[in-house]
Image 1 (tube, helix red, strand yellow):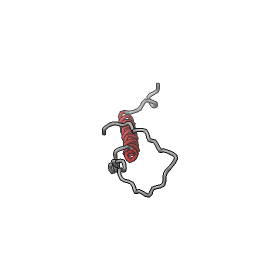
Image 2 (cartoon, helix red, strand yellow):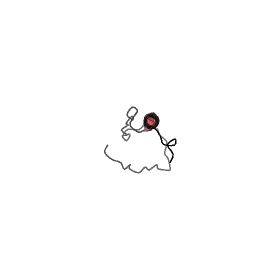
Image 3 (tube, helix red, strand yellow):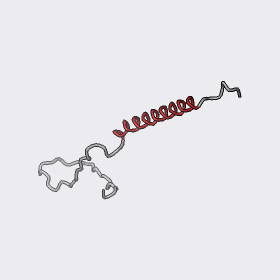
Image 4 (cartoon, helix red, strand yellow):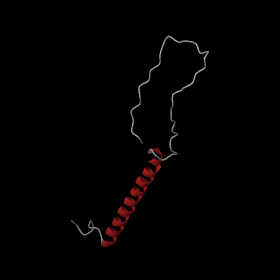
Length: 80
């Protein structure tokens, strides 16, 4: 290796500084992209509206008779 192709100490310092700045810029870009995705994560908006369903217990006397029946399965879910 000739003397002209060896990097001088000042050149090494500039190269190290450029690599640091490039790495810092890349890190900032990734952090910015990650921060932009936080709106897609669940639990960020208002809490969902909860409804408690109760069976109807009183009916009008003049309802027509139906020859069919609607049956729903009991939902299975966590208590939360």
